[in-house]
Length: 105
Image 1 (cartoon, helix red, strand yellow):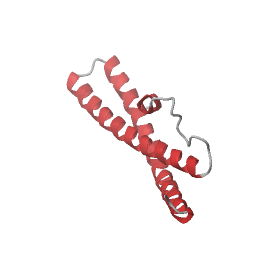
Image 2 (cartoon, rainbow, N blue to C red):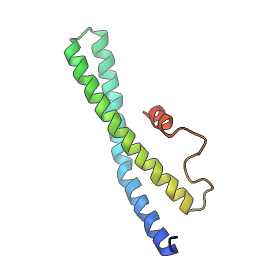
Image 3 (spheres, rainbow, N blue to C red):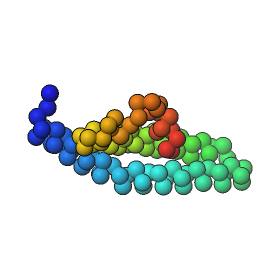
Image 4 (spheres, one colour):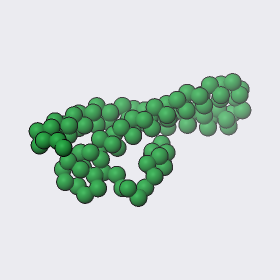
């Protein structure tokens, strides 16, 4: 379906996307970890439900964004693996993709 030149171009594009997403994912993961710590601290100090609710919404939005970014990175890794001759690419067909993302967060 695709020529060798097309496959190389696609693989290079996926590698660029993956490398650009790498630092973003690390930064977002640090934010999620920080928000979980703040959430636990506020809960232990019986802070107002309004503050905890706002923090929960922010954490949910960031986790959702992080899942999307991780999904993109995993798909890029999968295609790159296939292009480099790795059998099955980078994702096992025997796993639930959403469970992998949820576990990662």
